[in-house]
Amino acid sequence: MKEISCSTITEAVAQLAIKACCKLPHDVYAAMEARVKTEPSPVGQDILRQLVQNADIAAQESVPICQDTGLAVIFADVGQDVHITGGDFTQAINAGVAKGYVEGYLRKSSVCEPLFKRTNTGDNTPAVLHVRIVPGENIHLRLAPKGAGSENKSVLKMLVPADGLEGVKKTVLDAVVTAGPNACPPMVVGVGLGGNMELACILAKRAAARDLNSVNPDPAYAELEQDLLQMINKTGIGPQGLGGITTALAVHIEWAPTHIASLPCAVNINCHAARHADVVL
Amino acid sequence: MSESQVKHITAPFDISTATSLRAGDSVRISGVILAARDAAHKRLCECLDAGQALPIDLTGHVVYYVGPSPAKPGQAIGSAGPTTSGRMDAYTPRLLACGLRGMIGKGYRSQAVVEAMQKFKVPYMAAVGGAGALIARSIKKYTVLAWPELGPEALALMEVEDFPAICVIDALGNNQYEVGQAPYKTL
Ligand code: SF4
Image 1 (cartoon, each protein chain N blue to C red):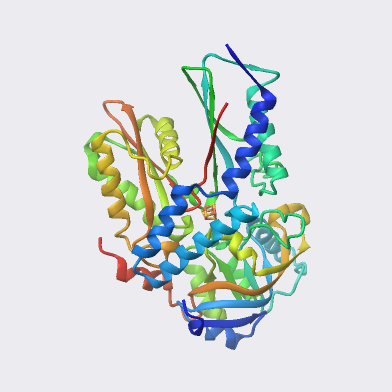
Image 2: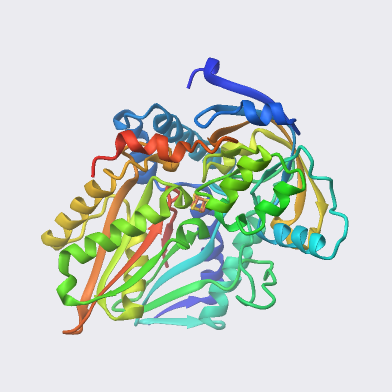
């Protein structure tokens, strides 16, 4: 049985936070660079060019791509043959978030309680942690900082089977149109289909945090990803909502088996700052 | 975008500058602007409710909706892109009535805000959301003016030089989100 210490986890999370916030994944960078050439709107082109330049500055100076360095969403796939030593796993993750956000000059955007006090926790903890136990003896961590501009535009619709494909398309399209410039397009749209209420939302989040160029392994869903992308890029919203054909860079769908009476459909919109960083321990 | 199409303005500004901006104009702002977002807006309105003086006379000022990331040693400010303006909508008409003369943020505004903008002759400009590292280069100084305990949400003054923005809703109510999107809508 492999042993992984809490201090190793903390250190890894701290580094992931800084990397994820300051260095745009290459595929997102390349996609924006490519869209400069295909975007017909001059304003849209100019914005895409500025976003590429912004990513360059952030990487060179190790400063955040966007000042909203989000809540730290962490997907942890923990191998069942791993023995975590020297402390509490969740505390180790949060200690890493605190270290990364404080030492990396990232913004602390977490408040301790949602309604009455809303006091800033001061170190961006707690993380939003999604853990899965998987075979093997590694821990895979993906940290995906998520800002509120796009997160606030998330939607959950408990569709029913009769709503079918059209219901799904309408839900996704409505979410994107309502989000418009508020979600900092060009966006990456994550869609979670099936499961139940909470599972659909987690699937949408996983979808939004997938690698940009990844495709659903099921050909029918892969085709739907493309159909939805084309549809979204015909809304006219464009970069920053000022008009154009580059409203989304990608649509990702994740799905799960569901109840005979249900068709949950969750949409989690990610902005062009579609940030994430990974490590395997 | 060629420089010739860009309007250079100095903030704070008067009504004639406010009304010279048209939806779609590319703008570069130099001078001093205010930085405030949700929590500072709430406090400004609480001051008004209590009949207290505001920490600063808003007349002629432009407010930038921003909550920057912390400055690294040697930097004036961290990343400093715009936040979603719509969250400020509930407070905005009251502040416009106090003389606030311009706003910079990102995203749609409510009908009530657009009406108040027309009444008080105030333009709304957008900065590129998520371009915080790039925008920070035009911010030369960041000074907290009130409520430092709010951290990135404190009310602050910013000295800016050629701060890049686009006028999206002008003082006449023309809306570049609508005008700009229409030609590319093929759905
Ligand atoms: S929506 Fe994304 S890019 Fe825009 S301000 Fe929020 S985190 Fe930054």
